[in-house]
Length: 229
Image (cartoon, rainbow, N blue to C red; front, side, top):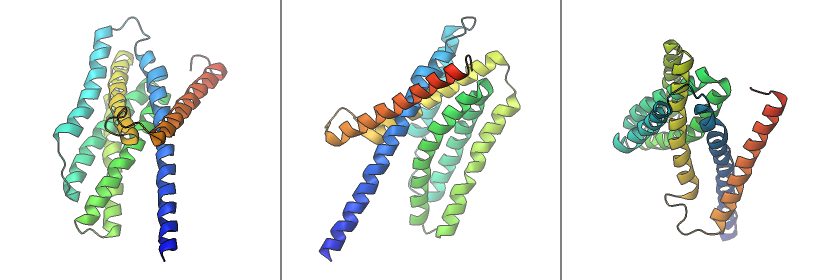
């Protein structure tokens, strides 16, 4: 019996380690996308005011910070759903604004938001089950939060921004993605990534770098095949 328990524990630990490495790889891709593709594009157009673009970048990060720091959703499942839906509206808006600027930017933000949102939905699911919701009802409530993301995306589409407004909207989305990327890095490496640096964190850094390198190579191939895409 002890041997069986040991095998189950080792299997669980292996699955956990694999998911952490996969997360590190994907976060590396998100970070590279932001640093080497998304942010440089924001400052490419010299006709737009540099400080205005910077202000919208800061506004995007500040919005995410306020949502995460001050709303205090609590551990009640239904309370957390209110927070999640409000947060999803801003996420959908960020995706829509980035998409209006360039579809590949919208996809970039969507990937980063998706990874972060999976974490949020996992927390919400645990809270819903803890408050007594059945498995089916908890799943229905979680799936229903996709409506709020769609609402945020629809709001960006309804605004129909012109080229300049699209760039400012893209800067807002970039700022939002930057804060989300930082939260994801903390999720993978801990609240203080450089403290207690061990072999496990070293391996995660390697997967992070591999993910970032893979994204940079993808950009290089796209630039070669589709110049000016």
